[in-house]
Length: 80
Image (cartoon, rainbow, N blue to C red; front, side):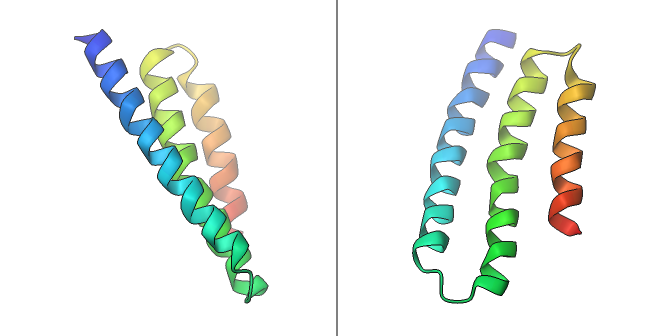
């Protein structure tokens, strides 16, 4: 069961990262309102970060506190 959960989660993480990176790329290539879009790009980066963080936490139970800390630091940076 853990193996199946890890692999299926990894598949969805990969899909999420690809889709999010495409949206980030689209924001960066149509850079016409930089004061707004820099915040949009920061928020869009949260999606792959959360996905990868969840996947790593599923695999490395003991290191979860450190992985969560990195996620929380980036979240604080985004909402500042």
